[in-house]
Image 1 (cartoon, rainbow, N blue to C red):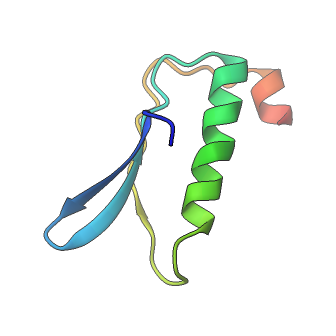
Image 2: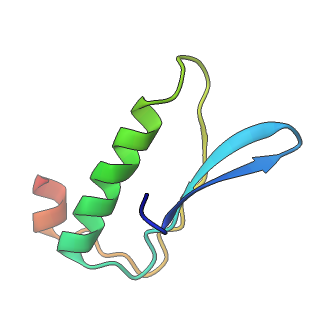
Length: 65
């Protein structure tokens, strides 16, 4: 699994924590796709997620993807 995609546990709750900070187009897109795959593997129900989007620019390339 990508080192930027982490699962943390807080007060008995599993939280998905993707760190997209500073990523550029290609790397950002691939990390988002890999994160989507990880989230879809989880059982149906509530999925808690906190994402770090510091210094990320949503360019037309990213928006298109």
